[in-house]
Image 1 (tube, rainbow, N blue to C red):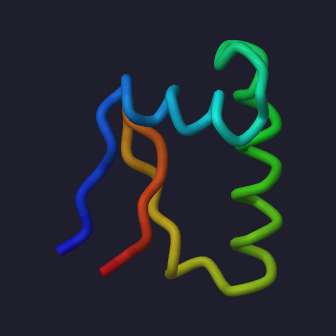
Image 2 (spheres, rainbow, N blue to C red; image 1 turned 180 degrees about the horizontal axis):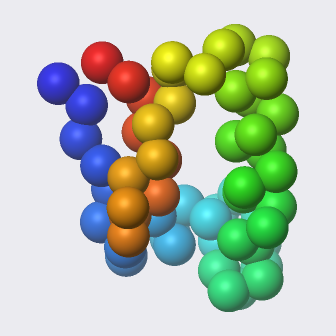
Length: 57
């Protein structure tokens, strides 16, 4: 069963991937998720309100 990341976990991951403060990464993440959805289809990545994203299960 897929589990959403907490805010702390999500922002820690953002910092680890982009090496910038999380508040500067939001648009970059949105763009990457959009590109992934275009390539693999809409049904695989879900938006979790106030948390981020998760793979659909």
